[in-house]
Length: 423
Ligand SMILES: Nc1ncnc2c1ncn2[C@@H]1O[C@H](COP(=O)(O)OP(=O)(O)OP(=O)(O)O)[C@@H](O)[C@H]1O
Ligand SMILES: [Mg+2]
Image 1 (cartoon, rainbow, N blue to C red):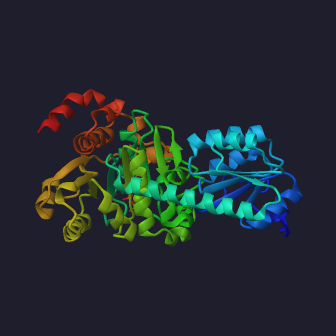
Image 2 (tube, protein in one colour):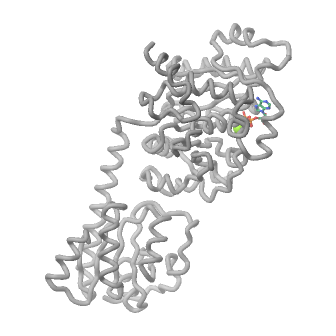
Image 3 (cartoon, rainbow, N blue to C red):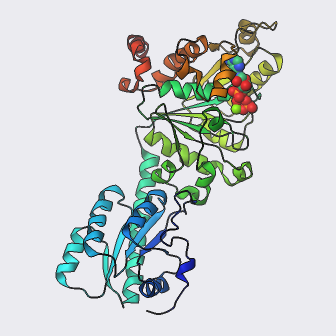
């Protein structure tokens, strides 16, 4: 082998592994080698590889770079440790292939390596052998990814997607989305995800007082290759068994998120979560249309004012033109008790659509936002919490065939749920 790229400048150099750095798309190759001359030799074969000093740093790297496909264990890496790691990876990250490079090979070494799930064993000086091993490992990684992608597309059991929408700004979409997601997650089962598709001005993270390290924008480099482990690294956990996929921290990156990517991410999330709640901007953006396509339920939020009612009617017409089945639509009247001249039945008559939930107005709602805790978690008996819980129970939970997924907080209503499913 020959050639000498400057390994000191390479991004994955041990000690510089940054858990918050943007993970690269799939296909990343990591060389584990502490001896600079040997590392240079290996890099000459695969200059795009990231060099890491030891297996401890490699574990950190793998945890935050789900796009890693191949680990090349260099000659100075302790053999027993490599074999242990390879055995582990076979179960935890079957998509990662380990290629072992040793100064000399014997039958016993090759057999124990293959038993531990190592994909290939190559001699240190054999640059062509390493090149071939990398080509084979890449092919296996691509085939596994393809299999995962087909599994996602053909998955039979999937979580329920609920999108909260209105073309009218400020009518309570984020309030409903956050409180609905928190209600569904109240059992602490960690199976609810709230996705913020208000890509430019999303404030789910602010409302839930989260400090996300990653967002949907970090999914962009993966393009449509993204898989579930990669999506999971983008999530921020909220205390109440609720995960969030926040909107981009830098709104300028919103343009990098394609509707196709949003569709793929939502599909992957439904494999992992029983409920995926989607908050939206007040417009029919491409990502929103994609979310509609995948939604089992679309909650249309309105308030008691003429512009909101007009925009609701126009939205219902648009959704009909988009051939979204009417039975998937629900109207939620927010601030339903406001005395502003219009009544709830005026709204129903004007839009010719029934109202499924009446959420009262309360100054406790903005106060709970200022405290960073959804009202449904802080004051379970509050009329706003009760209205949102009733909506969840009557309209969202029945979409799950599996009664076991009813959150503990709603389980007392189980008989009601069973009755409804029989209808
Ligand atoms: N039922 C309610 N009672 C009192 N205040 C409410 C209620 N629902 C929402 N609000 C308040 O109204 C404001 C707007 O609500 P929210 O952010 O949920 O609207 P939005 O539709 O998501 O807005 P945008 O279109 O800007 O995303 C917030 O200050 C929120 O606290
Ligand atoms: Mg909002």
